[in-house]
Length: 115
Image (tube, rainbow, N blue to C red; front, side, top):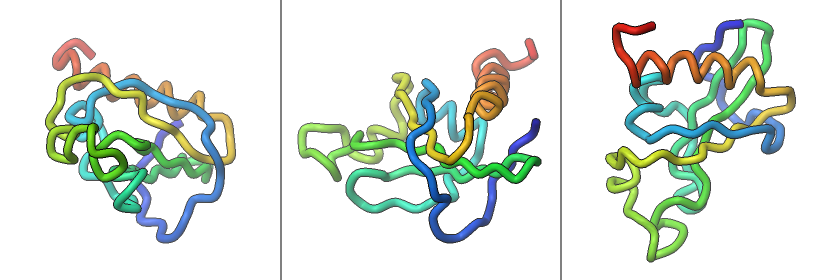
């Protein structure tokens, strides 16, 4: 299955269904500019994706910057860090195909020319 960023406005209803580990720069290179919403507090970065079967998912950070807690890194520090982070995946269906798709894209970012 293939996924693409969606211009869907409003919430993609659902709940936490999975996670994936990557740094922000890796995610940015694999997916492009975040296209979701920030609540300016708990979530600062979100990608909204739609599968070719119509399934909708959002990949987002959660409580990772000083917008949530002053001891945490600034948004700029979070977005430039090469340290891996466990991104949350929200939706209403099994994220296994999305996780596989994302891992393939992340593999291409981490090992260019090998894939």
